[in-house]
Length: 336
Image (cartoon, rainbow, N blue to C red; front, side, top):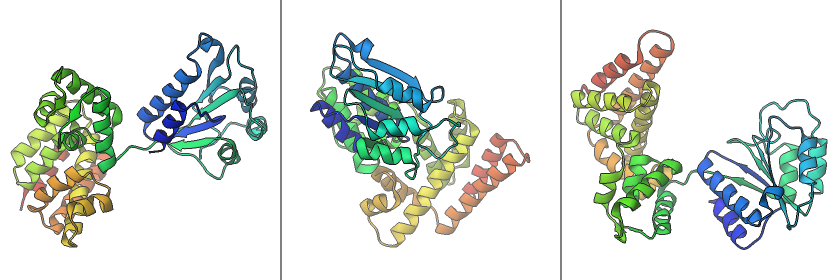
């Protein structure tokens, strides 16, 4: 995880002149930016030496001008440019990028300039290459598998708690790798146990909300046992808890694809850890998935995915309402 390297550098006072932050994991991005901001603006002159710009409303020349302003009674000034459009694949308005490129070729030693982008950047762009020469480009990605478990355990440690074995597994399965949601559940559980030093599996089960991941796992478990009534019940629970029917369809399709991957790799003689690494699936989900796979043949899993694809096509072509289509799909998947 690249942000760990950046956080360690900040703790040591090693600050780059230019950063380019991007990626899908906004929780880690915001946490790193917050750490950097606090480090550079901790003195009494922080308000004078911090400027935030919106990249959709400023020109490259304006960014360069802001970055060239000298700090007030401080070593460095921090300039953050949110929604920076000059580094991705999308179209950029017809502003001359030369002032920005000129600045990046000779950045001010008194400014830390941070560009915040979307999930992707275009490494072929001159602006990206220029940042790479003088600063750091950090992609923020969601941790998975063992890495996710370590992250969960560390977040408990920050709160003075030790998570016993299987706690991280359960949280990862129940919540997924949405770090913002995980942080909330970890905080809630830590408050629940109070002065207790350890967090047990029972503690987590009492405090963690009935999440989409957990409910869809129950749904596929019901389908694997051919319990259509319970399957429909879990599907309706997802919708009742605020999930859009399209999201339910997506969650169910993802889980069925995971089961197919687990089924195929298991037949090749792979163990749980090997399957998790090869398929990019959390080890705990692999463990539970192997139990469910025993109730499906490979052909049945493929057929289930075809049924769900048919639901998607019928809904998007106006041939039915999504909720009854989903209910019918569950009934079909439960048939032997």
